[in-house]
Image 1 (cartoon, rainbow, N blue to C red):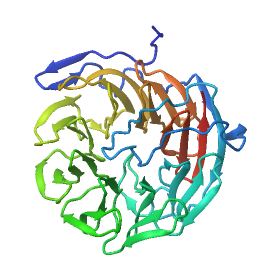
Image 2: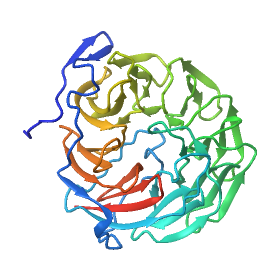
Image 3: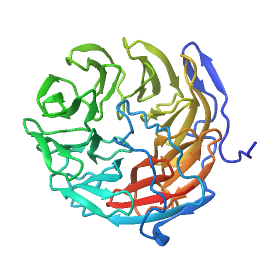
Length: 409
């Protein structure tokens, strides 16, 4: 068993359906920054992937449920930055200068204040650019507003914009349709031939083929989740809507701090005070993790065996917690690690990917799933936004518009 020196397997105290984590009042038993075994940066970027990664990352949290989990094998050794490019980034309403990346069909898609960019996954060269102003959204990590990223599905790229929503042909960036009746205010979700878009006029569902409006619901959302014919919108309350009609199915007062996550019949909500799981079919609370002391839980990343979330105490550094998923019960804490003012945004079967801030050194760190060891890090020049994870590759974007691709075995 590997030595565990800076993060601990955590004991639990279960009371009914609520789990309280035993430990000190700080966010994590170890309070220092993780030290990855390997650190890579852009100094030796040689211009192109040697082996083009496979897989895709079509939305900012991989799937329509916002799980952040991709069934791929990310790079683990023989790591190198293959290419780097910096995009034009005029500021939009005080948000980050660039969006998180999405990837499909051998291309990387990013929005900045200069528009939507399609880059070659192999070497980062620009394939096309569509000049539109992307929508700004509420935060999906941290505390700052963000630019809505491109969403890719079925040969189309969907953009939330200041004017509404536009669908582009992925091959050349030409418009397929646009809808300008209400400004977009959040990240679209594409599922079952429809596009669900947060707008200034509420949550709107459109036909993905031609943009025809299907329904509108008077609810707020930053990044809705869709699963099993149900849309989950997180605003002042958490609301479930029928994905076909927009009819309200149920609502609960638990308010997701960032956005909801849905998988395997459970809605995961990171809230002020608790990490909560409610039933997708009726909104009934199934379990809660409560550490006490006014702690906020960020939106989790949910893998088949592990739930990752960042705990934000009021007077201590943030920490990533890994919790074992159980059969219907509350997740049981396994390890934690200091992340400063960071977040965890993606996971594969064996690793979780965290964004670090508040100290020098690597800004994107890959942790092992079982023990939380910092396996490797990417030393971005500026603060990174959530990366895209592929088989054998990672694409990272900073909030200043630097796009970089990491390759490994």
